[in-house]
Image (cartoon, rainbow, N blue to C red; front, side):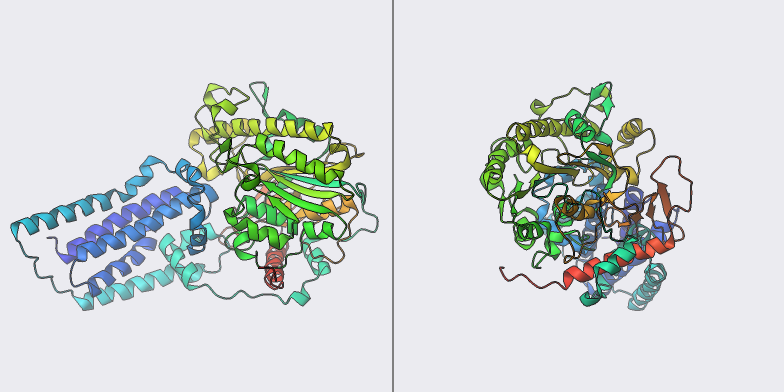
Length: 615
């Protein structure tokens, strides 16, 4: 049997190798000694505790600790591949969603990632084999060697000191990726767990619309353009799954990818500089932001944080103005706790998989063609009533990992796109566009179209840059004409069709938080008594959009650039929206501070709302 010190050093070497594997997958430009200096002290603390407290079966306990730390590294790698952030204990609340999105998880799982568990399998087999041999031969276990507790205590003290040196100076960094890199992954995980504290909430009485508007840098207008232009009209909001803006007017080898969206954009108000504002809840977060004009919470999905609150919302606002309201989604309503969110938002009713059935299911529910076919009669019933209606229709077929059956294909892509995530994404979006085209035509044929404002947008990005291989990144560069970056990734389209309004391309920057006030302006509905963090993007010339989750905290957009902080504000990076913009001075530290303050006010306001009484 290996001596205690040999076991200690062998497992230390194993964890060093795994640390480098994790860092290579998550961080860029790794300093040669950083994984050793930042991860090993934490590892040694856990191993020293084994030495200190385990008098028997030390090898087994080393293996268990190894498994736990390896599992954490593995979770960090896989989570980063999709979200681009470092997973923390907060994500445990979403473990029940993993089985539902197993296709997405497995698509990110490159086979060689599993090699991180190879040593555990080998050592486990060795221990089982050794135990059986000793039992068969009647060999008794050797008396354990006595641990030099003074030496172990010294190593623990030294390791704790190194962990504090790595952690304490970097705790104020806003950028979670940079913070984890500066602290070390294991230290960062421990820090997020141990430093959890009650948030410093701003008194809700101090949160006024005037305060919000001043932070955003906007002011109210006496005679806003388009106000009441669609008064009394229906509102149909179509939320397209994973729709990114680069698809609009995209041709690949002469083939239009989204011909129906292209036509719609050319005949409507089209906002090409529009951006996602979702977090861990993705689609459900988009539903929350669009219907409340609040920002997503700092941790977990909005459906996990806010469903017990009496949320001011677009459905409630329009109901107060004599509108009927309903939301349509082919998934089960329990997914992402939507049932409770819908109650909090105040929808009159919802339609989910119980209504749509389970035929022609892809991923989580029936395909978009079924969604639109079965939704149309319900919209006709609502349109025939004596009151206007607000309906949100949520598509889903073009969902990650985009591997829809080939019998749904409406396009043949070139060979270079075959069997790639980019290619699968494009063909799934091409199908979603085809199904949408059928729906648009049916809305026109039934007369609903001419009596409705249609707002269509993508719920969130579809191609996280962290998930793409080098070859797939090359395909994205071919499409964009430049390397695929953060700004491209979070850019989604907004298309607004308003009866009697001439088509126009509007370059003003907007985000999902702006849809509620923009819709209210078009419908002639007052927001004087409703707090909102978005703005009417038909009437403002400036916008300040805080971003969260998919980008580090402190990231924001203005009308000139995307800003992403580094360890501090001063080493942050700007990405110009316009290709010919100046290289620097497109954003300011004042905007950075105001963006953070807006997030704090939104968090504070929602958390202090009264609890629902219909739970």
